[in-house]
Length: 299
Image (tube, rainbow, N blue to C red; front, side, top):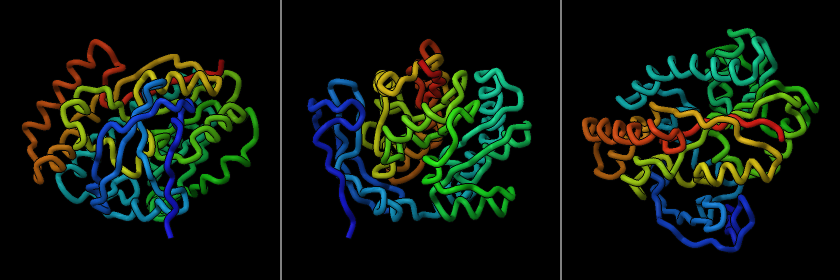
């Protein structure tokens, strides 16, 4: 029987000042609805009454879940793969630039099917990849020859080992939020960088689509970050944010999915317009982008 987590306090800052905000539906797997609550102290939003770590696996079992299956079925997934080739290079350049290390040691947490880990290996880095999903690990092994490890091994890693730790759209999935960040403090080198990319519910596309915003992705997304909540979480764990980098393509990808959720069918022109409008507003402030990459250093 599935065990459910009901938060009495904010899972980020521990505040009791939490209230229901909206109800979102799982359009990918279960068609169940989940409450999303808002913390009025740190501004984190979080999915209430979520399955615990041992029970949530069933909500990832879908051929449409591209980060695990690597599927190219359908227009949106085809576009995702075309864009990914470019963004993988951009991500690798970001890590090299932020870390000031040309050939370093990287921990990639939530490696999915291994595309980013492989890109960094090809750039000359030594990479340890962690991935909880068996299907994704199998794809990584078959496609790239990558042996990804179970995330449980995170807590066995040696202190002061890594020049960079990356989480590309992964932190919002992690039940042990505080434990992961505390471990990163230990295993990251003193001058190392922690790079975390997460969706941003304060973006224009999130405001436009509300409960249909695809990046809420309940119940797989346990937390829904704002730049303010991420800044507060980083400070709680001894990190400071050095840069807020935009992920421009995410607004289009998320808008295309959101159109499907809202109208029962895709509306590519409208999704493109909403994506453009979101990016236009974020062009003056990266903190308004649909997804934000936070580059962090130890305090």
